[in-house]
Image (cartoon, rainbow, N blue to C red; front, top):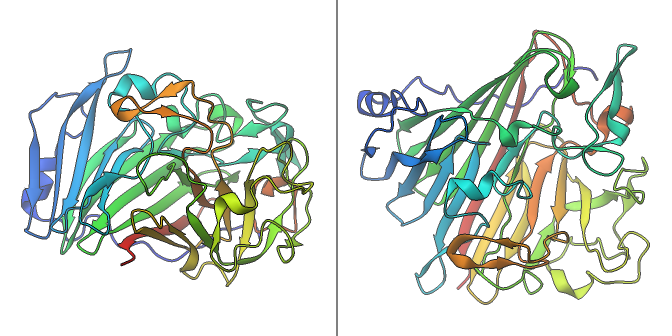
Length: 393
């Protein structure tokens, strides 16, 4: 297949209230305006200054909240999710994603905390792929391979942000134009990413993109989750709705095999503690590295279907992930090493958090048998992922 077609995304602006439209006008424009808030009693969205880039452009922070107390904060730099606060079983609020208290932390090459990564999330072997017989060469920024869009991927760009209210939902629409040749990718790509918070504690991420030349696209959200709000994630329970995964070589590039999870440390079809097998004697878990692999999700994309469940028995917090994507990258925070100090002075040690990145498979442009990531003029890239937070009593 050469064209990506996913479920339709709701019209972004069709039913935005006049109050919200007025409030969002000029968002991320560098105006340095005082706080602006729009709400309807069920959900609220507002914006405040958050700092400035080295070139002087202002960056604002958008705060989305609901009557249940859930709060999501996000910035247009990298379309980053800065924080997600949700209640535990006792009703105490806690921040369940890694990040920084100030913009400066995100400018010092952190490991993609909370960002939207692209054009191509995950790895492309040796930074090379071909479309219709033409070879394209990308930056090599992860050992011998291309990772998460290159040296200056979407995580390091300032997006345009707009707030919206829509019925019982509120959120932020981020948009970006990536020019032809950006990081070596062909075609001008126009991208929108929408964060929507509901009254029922779900955060939905909608992706939309078009191009004027054939290109490859694979966008994902790279938040690092720790439902306990501290410590490590070894006592979290994880379920992944996948019978197969994609084994990788020593540089984390898929071999092309779709291997069964049965009988391996990669079998999360039933809830399992992450720490139970993370150091197992298995060829795919080298030297205590842990998990950084793609699971082949059950079901048929582009249907929206359940992909994974994460549970923290101590706090009672739960996270259910549903997606239209064919794959899920589970990364267990192996490369965190204590050199980063984040929100509240917390030092981020190895396995302090994990990522559940909904995606197409790594290196898909070089594996014709994998679901295609090619986007052509006249087609739309559309993808949806839903993060539903809850509490186990």
